[in-house]
Length: 288
Image 1: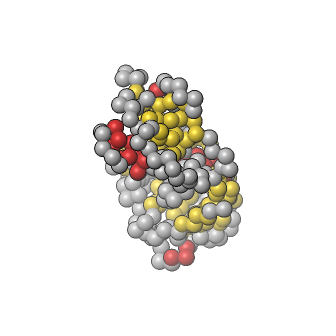
Image 2 (image 1 turned 180 degrees about the vertical axis):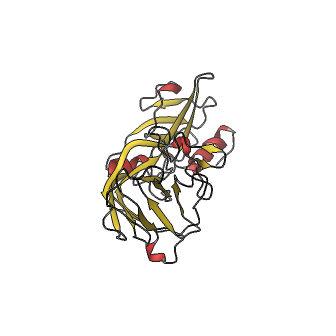
Image 3 (image 1 turned 90 degrees about the vertical axis):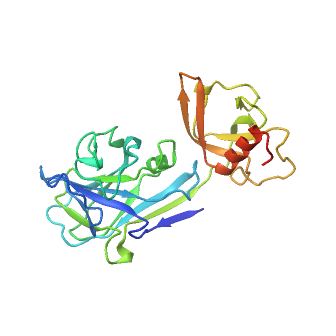
């Protein structure tokens, strides 16, 4: 099974924390990440993002773990860390701009502190993990099915770590001086054993109609994400046999679908840019 491990440095990372007591201050360059949920007026949350582009869309997640290393500065009672996905509405949050009030300059969180369920973060909780003692390291087991949603149509917007009960916990950020203590993500995954191609597109069809597996036209508003689509047509090479759908350059996984009711059209975002480029060239009458 493929394994993904990421422990990015400051240049490749995206992590920060936000603080209710200093609601307009950004801590993106800080060496520490904080979480605090007990004291009103002093709540703190952490935002963190990892590049998941090497994990194939449609992958089945077997195991996912987030590693955080305890840092000096934490105080108070233990509690639990709650991990959620940052909402796609806040996709453009900026590490060096996010504060308690805004996810980037001049753009407010729906509720300050990234606290609005369904607007600032998605409702599915990825983890509810004990903080441990002050200064202790934590290995947070992330719910595989919820983690897999980062690879879906809503995209990977990163994670927010809240707490309702701990009174200050501190962890090393990717800006800290010790590389071995940068936040780390471990993921083990596999692709489904059976992959069914649901849609077809003829490379010579000027109208770009999407067909089902029986060759029938599918209405734009009926096309669904998280399915496989294949290019067909007379100009498509057919002599080579590919071992699976991932390696077949004429098959792609649909990541998202955007339907426009006013024009009765659909925009499909697929995983293989080369396949889409080939399709566009063929529609233009050029060989790819």
